[in-house]
Length: 356
Image (cartoon, rainbow, N blue to C red; front, top):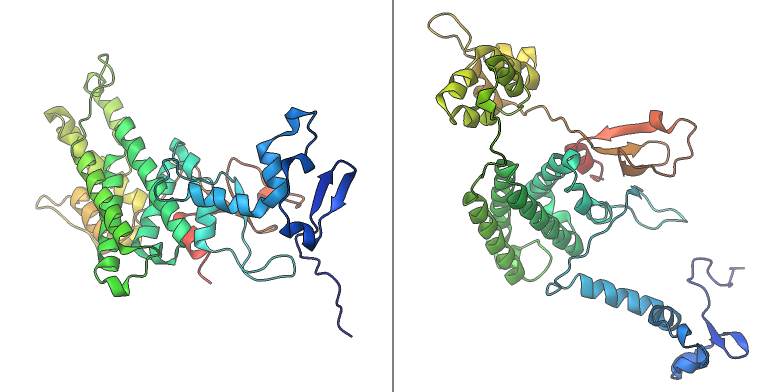
């Protein structure tokens, strides 16, 4: 015989506070208008708390309305989640229904605060670029709006700090190219929302690119500059750069830096940092004097192979409890040695984690 009792997954019963005490709310009471005096005593004005009253009357309705107002396109304050970790589940169980998607993980993780941290900034920017290339249609409407809100914060941070200008310009160019391919045919658009909203967002992207093009790098101090240091220290600083385009830009500042930026050992270390010995042997380039052209080899290798990615702080996945979290935040793990169960995730690994 089937079990006809109340489902244990139900939200529970509704109780109302009256003068005689707490009373179970019946179906007849739900149809009647409930006065404020039935919940709070008239002699205690401090009990008239609007938040408690909303929670007593209709918590679900107020919560949905609050989220709708925050996610509204006309809302001046964007909605950001601030969770430090999330549980990644890939199947339905009795306790959990459905599975965690890329859009849900992108919404719930604290990416809005991550862009303020210099250790996580490049990680988030690379993740935004990968999503813009191929994963943007897979995001929900809320996730797509959250994506644009976070991107706006990233652009504003770059305009204020005047740093990382080129990576953000490349990100905006990639995103604009992807959106042009998705919204060129209105009937074939796979993006969530009205087509006019995405046209307006594309106009914002073009406006952000124009602001980044017009940015003027101003000096921060009038003391010692890079050219005042000895050549050995200048080369030591240049060795910390991991992008050859930064070296080229630095060499265009003045003739002294230009001669140091052509150092063969500098470009050799840069090639060995990003590419393997096998990849380098396949793209050897020898000059007329018999020397290896490391600078030309670097840009040739860059067109054929991806660069090595290294980040100061990344997202980690615990194999014991299947929780995704930032490196410097704790998560409720029940393992004896939680550090041995964690695995660092690159931005591409984060995307691949939800391909199921």
